[in-house]
Each structure stands twice: as structure tokens, then as C-alpha cells.
Length: 65
Image (cartoon, rainbow, N blue to C red; front, top):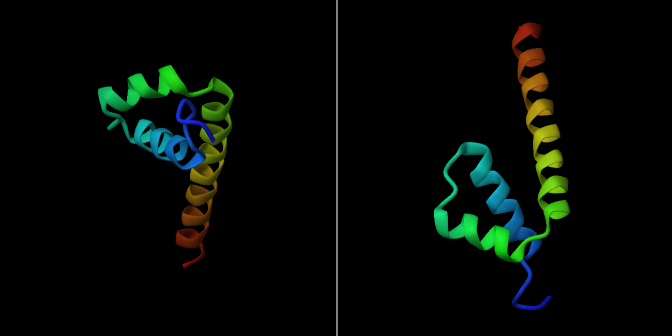
């Protein structure tokens, strides 16, 4: 992978920070300069699905007790 592209790990960290609202200005600018929108969309959707799944699991776990 060239220096001009973000790695998948960097994209995951960036999306995770954005989920919690703690993305730094420097990383935000780097994301827009070097990242491809489809990569952020894919990781964002996967993250949202995992989050909703965890919520459903937690609610079911509490309701069973």
C-alpha cells in the first residue's frame, strides 16, 4: 500500500473515533485527503451492525435473568 492511502486499521480507528465524537482535527483532515469514501462507509456499516448486535445481545441477556 502506498503512502498516499490509509490502511484498513487506520480507517477502523478513524471510524471508531468518529462514532464516539473524539476525532482530532488532524486525523479528520488526513481522512478527507487520503481516504476513499467507500472504505469509510463499509467500515461504518460494519461498526453500526456490530453495535446494534451488541445492544440486542445485552438486552436479551438482561431480560433472561
